[in-house]
Image (cartoon, rainbow, N blue to C red; front, side, top):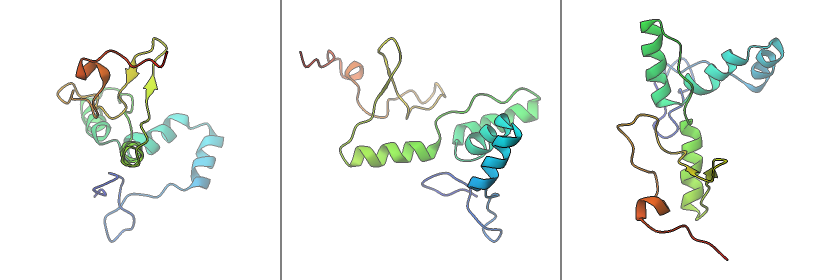
Length: 127
């Protein structure tokens, strides 16, 4: 079972929760050189909703697990910052804005917030 807001596994055996991976366990896996295991545990198996489904399908079909998407906990942080009036944007080297809230699934292609492109407005310049 998963928490509704963060989509992370619930804690505790009584709630059928997931295993807890503490800071020291992360350090131990890091020291052992288990980077891919760490990435899987901290992203796909944690709170990447779409990634969980894609990982399950890949395992069942015997295919490689796809790259992890944006974790739901990061999306919650972005929404909380937006509610405080702070707008965080990430840009590629070419200057195009990356929508971190958008799912990789092409069926969900609506932007998470209005962009200059979606509004049909030229980019704002301070000059």
